[in-house]
Structure formats: C-alpha cells, structure tokens
Length: 307
Image (cartoon, rainbow, N blue to C red; front, side, top):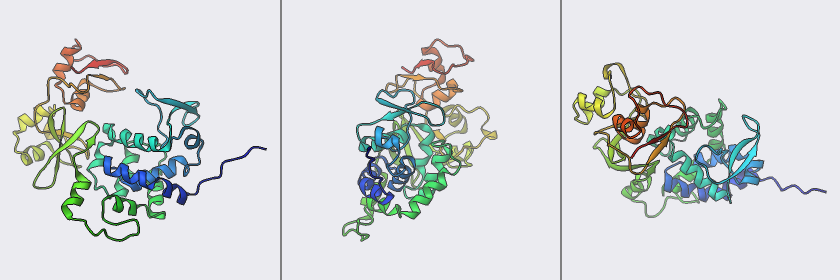
C-alpha cells in the first residue's frame, strides 16, 4: 500500500519559511509578505508536485540561460521545463534574483516596500502569471494570514511577538529599507532632496519615471537642457510622449560599451534602441561592434556584442 506524504497547512508553510522570506526582504528588498503569498499560491502551500519533487516554490520556468537541473510537467503547454533546486531555500533565493534581474519588474522596486497591494498588482501587470485574478489572490492570502507583520519584523519595526524593538532609530530603519542594493545590475547611488532615488547602470546615472511625467518635466527637475536630455534617452519627439511608471530615464550620456554585460541575446521584437537603453550603450556603437546597418531588423536569438 502506497504511503502519501502528509499535506502541509498554510500556517505550517508560513512558519517554516517566514525567516527565509524576511532574510530575502532585507537582502533584495522584496516584501516578505509578497514572497510568502507567492509561495503559498504557486506551490499550494508546499504541497504541489513541483514543490515536493523539484523544490520549486514559485513556478519559475527554465527560460533562456538556465543551466541548473530541470523538471518537466504540463502547465500552459504540454511538458514544460521548470527549474529544479536542491532545497526550498535555493528556490526562495532564485525567486529574489529572478525579480531583481529582469527589467520588466524594475518598477516594483520604486514602490514603498510595505505596499503589498502595489506589489501584487505590479507582478500581475509585469506578466508573472497569466491568471487575471493573480493580484487579488496574493492580496487575499496576505490579509487572511496577516503576512504584513513579517514585513514589519524584517524592517525592525516590531518583533515576532508584535512588540516594538527597544532600539530602532529612524536612520537605522531607513538604512535597512533603502540601503544600496542590486536591482538587476543597478545600484542605488544617491537620493535627491525630494527623496527621489538615483541609480547607476553601466556607470550612467538614471531615475525611474513616475506615471505621466514628461521629458520637459524631468529635464527641468534635474537641470538638464532638453536637447541633451533627448540625446541621453534617445528621444526624437519629446513633446509627444509621456513616461510610464518604472521607465528608465538617464541623466547623462550613454557609454560606448558595457564591460559587465559583454553580449546580449535578442528577444522577439527588440530593437537596437531597446538594447541601447537596457545596457546604457550608445546605439551607434552597438551597430559598429556588430557590423550592422542602421535599419537592420534584429532576429530573436541573435547575439549582439556590447564590448
């Protein structure tokens, strides 16, 4: 007679992985509440076959560049490839690096770290899952199991018994929440008087745009001539555009090459301009390094040198 592993309750799952989620919050600035809610939802509180057999708690598929072990199962399509880990802790770490390392999730990190609703909606908007109710499913779990308390504990604003810590200076809490960190390859290097964060990509300073901001507004805010601003951001008709939340806005000239990235694999629909802005490299330099004509159409899977 076959024996089946005993199912884990959501409460047991939370108690098992809360410390890992809080540690990842401190290191990668992803709310512990969001991590736990995603783990609960994606893994069925640790009871799914993917979680039990592949230790994959977040439904992350192989994607290009994955060199680790794999696990195959039917999902949106038949026999899809999922990442396989040695243990759940490795899965939690890869989940953090997955969100930090992809530009489509960059806007999430401009939200307040305690804005779990914004994070939930942002994950759905960025395409983490296809379920149209994904954001609400995360929010429901966060509120049902009071997961926001783990955000507060990770920030040092309360202890595990819901008491305020004896030593919690305001400056220390700010440093914990906003210390320079890796957003993909981006580092937080400065903050304006209006508490707007300035990052660096390939040594080029930039900010994340807020919804509806215009080139004229941002050029004025950072005291940059509009012609220079357009050059920095490869803009032709600044009077006819607005930025969306999370758009990268450069504050100085792009570089001739990117020594960290080395080369890029073209994704479907990408243009040289897209790649130039992604890596902070001048588009004409990308064309020259790869011996391409100005209007060459790129193909998915094509390799482009960045240095």
